[in-house]
Image (cartoon, rainbow, N blue to C red; front, top):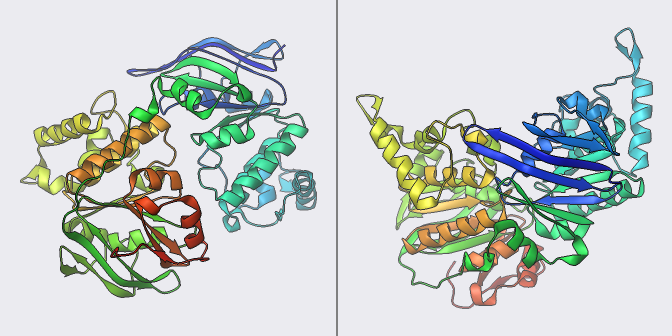
Length: 502
């Protein structure tokens, strides 16, 4: 008998059938991955199990007994906790307070902090974590916050713990720590549903994997019976290798030149250039300063020294509007908080940067706005119900396309992208790669800042490597390999391909 079963679950939203007779069986004490493209229904299913959504029809069973989950409290009563990608902690409270926020020990409204901290420390010790229960959550790293979320789940006696993209903001060392915690949870016979777009993780930690596609159940496989190529084909329904292939093409004149750019304590002596038609990667370890360099060029950070030139002409960039005026576009790595305008519709999201261009006598032309939306919808294969649909309800891949379309609508010449495929599925990634390739052929100069080396090596003509705020490598495509990039990223080697101008 299975530990948990979802049977023939259906859920619809306006214009969208999110889940269509989806069934899922989970065994006690296993790590069960759920994968699929954005829009496949993974998050909808998890939100139903967590009590955020009600299902339209279907049945849920624990240990063979039917249960009703209509709220978060129902989910908790049935031993289900969900750790969402956007962590749900209160930074102004301590670790202990966050763990037991729904069950603080005490009498007559007075919290017994001695008992609270004792209980929290015992729980922390059970997973051998190095976290102080008295520390404020605002003092913790992202990975430590992730551990606090897991401790919250354990404090509620959860038997089924759902992890939604748990490594999205973690570095490699922090990922290994998470793996160790998952192993300890398995040893304690806890059951984990693990959602991730990073397929390596699926093979690293999972016992079984279930694939959803277009709201439908496709297959469940033992992880030992499938490889990554087969898994991707189940996810997208086609051979992913055919969706994107790197194409060489001639480059044109220099569009962006950065000379001796510096910001005290962050980066220094940064010099490089981008040519029209070129996609250049920027790699490095977390905290190396690569994102700060991109933000400084766009005016999101002030630089202390150095110069920026566009098409040979020096420009002063103090704020994003200066960058936009000079033909520089920027796509943030933080899609949720600083990318989309979540409470605005898709039409408004694509036009907000160029309202003046679309307006006459201070009134926005509805026709121009609709024409703009239609243009990028066709060019970028964006999927949504209608122009008035809130962008917050789109898949991550479609949200990313809208952010990119909004940036392109400013008619930029230089495009800076930070982690452009973070949190989107393999099919959407391939589409983004093809879009960037098409833009490079059209003459855009593109700087791709990414922590995923396979991504950089698949699409970039060369890679700039940043270590401790300095450029330590400029590597041509024919010489790119992960080992060389990592040597430069860890400051163990400087490597500049012969004859290549920065």
